[in-house]
Amino acid sequence: MKPRTLLAVPLVTTLLAAGCSGRGGSEETVAAPAASASSAATGTFGDLTALCQPGKPTSAPTQGVTATEIKVGVFSDIGFTKNAEFVDTAKVFTSWCNDAGGINGRKLVAETRDSKLFEVRQRMVQSCASDFAIVGGGSALDALGVKDRLTCLLPAFPAQVTQDGNVGSDLQLSQIGGASYSGYAGYYNWLLKEAYPGSAGAVGIIAADSPVTKYLVDQDKEALAGSGATVSYTDLYPPIGVSDWTPYAQAIKSKGVKGLVFLGDYSSLSKLEQVLTGIGYKLDWIDANNNAYGPAFLSLAGPSLATQNNLADLGGVYPLENASGNPATQQVIDLFKKYAPDGHITLPAVRGFAAWLLFAKAAASCGDALTRTCLYEAARKQTTWTAGGLQAELDMSQLDAPPNCFNVEKATPGGWQPADFKPNKGAYRCDGSSFKLVTSKSKPLTLADVGKSMSDLK
Image (cartoon, rainbow, N blue to C red; front, side, top):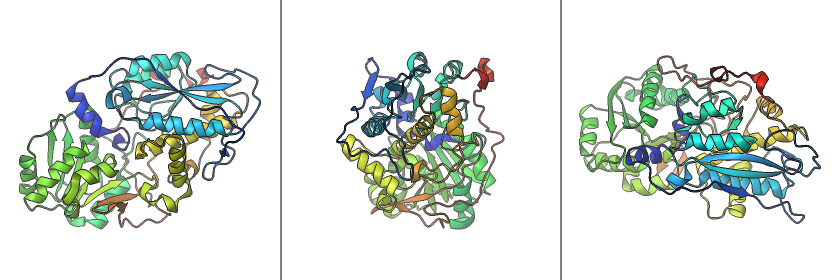
């Protein structure tokens, strides 16, 4: 699956070209508060009961698991991007879970593995040496660590995956969709066949000129064609920024582009839209992609929101602005207020929380004998997984399957709100749409590639 829903492309595309700057430093441990008798935490999240609870474990069955704690790694580029969403999410979840008694009495300890963009392999080597699993995070250049992770048989429950080679790799339980499939078949079918059929003959793609986004262009071209589109315009822009977006806007206008897919940072998109609006050109739709989903893009886009039709597919995650209508989403917001009041709840943060939930659900079912084999196999048994109600249903036993559902958000002057995409299952549309990638199919790394097999997992 094309992973633009995953890592923060707006940050990475700019920073890859700008080069790495920042200070070295040690790993940061997020050790959550110990369980408290007066805690209001119940260990129940959404429709997941007894997720975290007291117990009396006695064994130390494997690396990272003792009778008192479970040590997990959380990958993040925080030292480079200064974006704390995965670290904050780890703090919130582990604090809440430990207040409820931990995983059958074992306290969760989250170790931040700060990959600082270019140090993914170094942090993976450290994680391999001490962690039980890696949970709830992601790094822009995540493919750099896959070989080491598989060699040391480290299970991964990521918030997001980014690079070809990691998307769909073994021992990884991603809640996004299969590597062989486009993640946007349902969304594109709705856009091009129902909502704006007149745009199908003139679709454009603009992407930042970086390794993180360039291969997505080929996947998008293939998936768009599968939905009946003709891509009549493509262009790349320097990821360090564009001083004048007028040439791009004029090219879009001269080509008669009616629908535009933008793969890059939302700050650049907002500037392009301001120029498009200024020259009086309005597209039928702009796929802002869900990196733009949040208040920052709304503020940057300003008056152009009233002219340009910005859409984003959340990939089956319940929209944050409607949290009052979904107990699980509201619970995440309430937990952030309690445990990380200065943190920002983003779409990747919600995905990170869902990853923690899957990990905890599987780990809790293993009881005292918590091993990597039990953890991985228990997670694979979740065939109707919704992360307690945070997202549309997924079958975790199917590792390479198309996404089941989608939901579309529209950016308006009054904020983000659900578009009229004809949901048929609660907040989502689940219509069986799928598109298997052929020419741009991802080739994830497997255990066999490193001379291992599932029988080696302990």
